Image (cartoon, rainbow, N blue to C red; front, side, top):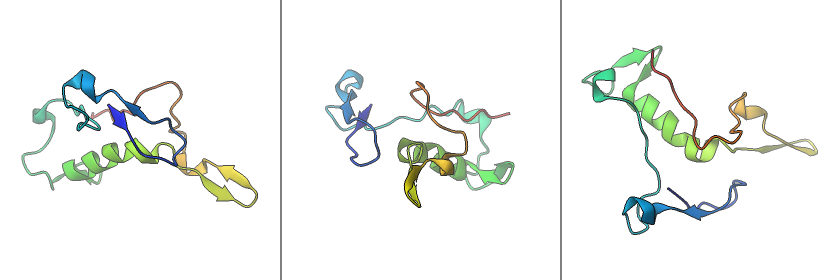
Length: 96
């Protein structure tokens, strides 16, 4: 919806008006139906993750999907472990 963060290598954008938020809405997580998650958001259900863990991880993609670091004399994206965005608008977690 909106990216006003600088310094992560991503253009600043603002599509929040199209969602009726007058510039306030910055992101939205579509996380499937509530029935897919335990009633207790701290309950472990996905490997070693709770609902809170999953929400935190997914919302972190807003910035962390673009993290780079200096490795000696070159910029590296090795921390991304194959999660580079290649034309996709978001990263997706598939619950099984």
